Image 1 (tube, rainbow, N blue to C red):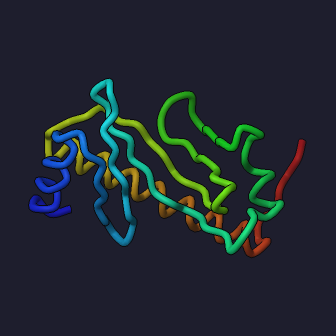
Image 2: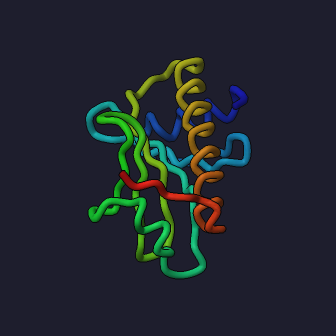
Length: 129
């Protein structure tokens, strides 16, 4: 992320306005929250209609999937057939800190996109205990 894009995004965030930024072909939406936090979100999967059975089996009945108690999580938006990766982070004006958060978030998004493309193509084998 170049510094100019960072400054434009930071200006919007400080003004409590939502904005978006593209990093490595990943569109990240930035939403300032009340408690000095920032919500990062990106679409990692979009179906042509309703989500497939394979996809629905991965998500919980509440439409979310958390792999850690805290941190990023997946949220199913079944009304539009998409899955979002969401992460709430501490708000920072530091270029280096925000750049690190965004790069890690985008790497996680890429990994989930690969995973869901495999699920969509029925390449995944689910192992039950």
